[in-house]
Each structure stands twice: as structure tokens, then as C-alpha cells.
Length: 235
Ligand code: 5GP
Image 1 (tube, rainbow, N blue to C red):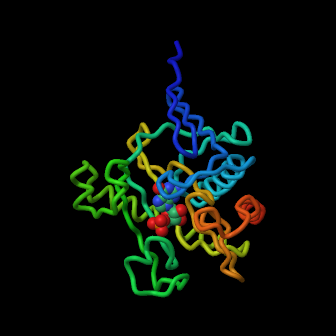
Image 2 (spheres, rainbow, N blue to C red):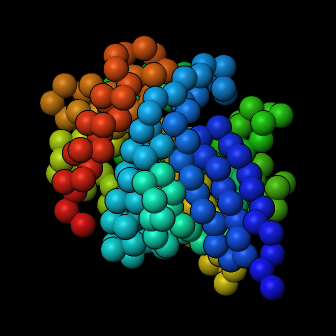
């Protein structure tokens, strides 16, 4: 007997959960500033699905466990069902975005070491930045936090090197983790121009959602350029 699929629709993806697996379909919509700015373009879902697929495969090859199982169609990845940990884990290598409000360093300057930040995923609170004490209030132990931070830094090492080889600086990115049925913590969600800041190494030009956030040019062109370069990453 198969159970009815459970469907969740978010701003950028639709998750269809069927037993132990889920189909993650990437939408063409683009949102920023908590959904206050909206747009879309044809092919955006397919671009983000392909970039996530390539980067998850690369991470798997380097020993990082991810939820990826396969690519079902151009916009849909088949993934392991996870019980998501309600955290956004941000890793930063350069000064950009909300970090500019916290440090007296020049925009786009390189940090002396990567910074990891935790945000509690909660719409009512507006996803506030938290530390491991706050996380304990939500049942997330210090050991879990330290495991997640180690994994996030490992992901940073692998992706930074791979993207550098195709002329992209990984300025910062956001990850989400969850528990698989065996209790292991594995990497979930997506890795795409929606969730990363990708900069052209030569010009520091954005190839990511900042093009949409701050009206920096043709967003479709920027996402396509990121995809074309990432296709050349050696797996
Ligand atoms: P910032 O805190 O500077 O706004 O974001 C840091 C990095 O994490 C950026 O690459 C940004 O795209 C990503 N990020 C942070 N929060 C979110 C979020 O709620 N949704 C998405 N898609 N990306 C996020």
C-alpha cells in the first residue's frame, strides 16, 4: 500500500514527499527581501536544479553526505526525505549582504578566515541570527551545532576550490541540514544562485540573486553564465 504524497509549496520549490523520498521541483519564480520583491523567468527552475545537482554530486564525491538521489527531469531532483533542522547556516568568505551591518570592513573585501553564522528559520521572527545557546532553546544541542558547522566549513573548502577553477569566487552561501532516517545529519535543500553569492573572479561582477535584488542587470543572463561555468567544474 502506498501512502498519498504530501506536498509543500515554498517560494522557490515544491516538495512532494512520497514515503522515504521526496521530489524537489524548482520553480521559475524569484523572490527577495522576504517575498516583498517578486519576479520570474523561464528556465530559472531548470538552471537551479542543474547547478544544485552538479554541486551536490561534487560534494558527494568528496565525502559529504547530501540528500541527492537523482535528477528526474530538468526541474526536479529526487532526494532523501529528511527531518529538517530549523537553521539556515551561512558561510562567508567575503564581505557582502547583511555582514556589512556587523563589521567595519570594506564591501567585497576578503575575510581573513571564513565566518559561519546561524539563523533560526522562523517567519514570525523574520529568521533572526542566533547562537548555540538560543539553538538549545529549540532542542538543537551544542554537539549538533558543532557537527553542522564542521560540515558547512568542509562544504566551503570543496566548493571554493571547485568554483575558483571556473573563475568564480564563492563570496558566501546558505545551507540547510536535516536528519536522515538513520539519525545521521546530512545536507539538504539547494545550492544555487538563489542561495549563494557567486562573483566573477576578474571583475567581481555578481552571477547570482543579487542581480535581481539590486537591479544589477539581466538576471537570466547572470544565472545562465553561472550554470555554464559550473558545468565545466571537474567532478
Ligand atoms: P545575507 O545574510 O548576506 O543576506 O545572506 C548570506 C548568504 O546566504 C547569501 O548568499 C544569501 O543568498 C544566502 N541566504 C541567506 N538567507 C537566505 C534565505 O532566506 N533564502 C535564500 N535563498 N538564501 C539566503
